[in-house]
Length: 309
Image (tube, rainbow, N blue to C red):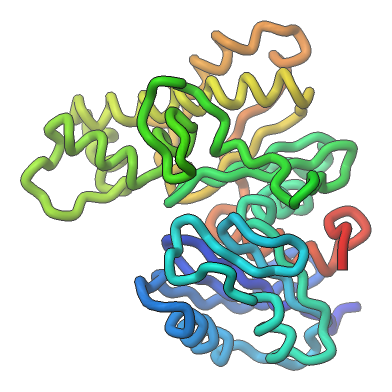
């Protein structure tokens, strides 16, 4: 067992990352790059260039997390925030490259949930909602110590809970979705429309969080706006699912108290049922490697985390 390793891949709208993960969930080797705005084959070549940097000996499988939506479990991916891939046969391409190895692919937010349940903030808890707040907002769901897939593999996708019915339009075609308000690019755009860095061509959510930490009033208001939306969505999910832990990862989770304080205030205001008050809402412990660790768990912990092949 000690010689076994899993190749893990994390495909998101902001970054592509690959790594070798050992049976204990430790990422031994790690490579990443920004997700380029290129066509389908250009994206695949970028991913292959990262994979070429990793050792391929002693591999027992390939685990993948990719932004959704996707056809699951066949692995044709159409990430909402990666327009270059529409119906791209990612699982099949990886099977061709790594012949004879199992290749298991799921939504990137699901991999974060799995990673946090296996080796992170949800370890030892049976009922966990894992969330990613970055270029998009997604989630994955563990109930009764097992990953719940749902009819199409999208169970736990909290990003499209409606938190403001008359609110901002969402890329999904709806209005007022959590993702439309709390995802990093939308939050930065809202703040710029309110006058924050209005003359700057490109301003990011990372810039926004930094300015909020320095007390910029519009940046602070933006972070509170995101925190309130998250608190409403998580309270609703908790009442429905009777959770133990909600673990929040992704780039926006790095904002710390600027995000988590209004989130907690709003959550406590709306989570009125007694059973919901005991839920812990915490930052993901695994940080930027949560997706890789979770992807590896599709191989190492297939009895709990993989329900199709």
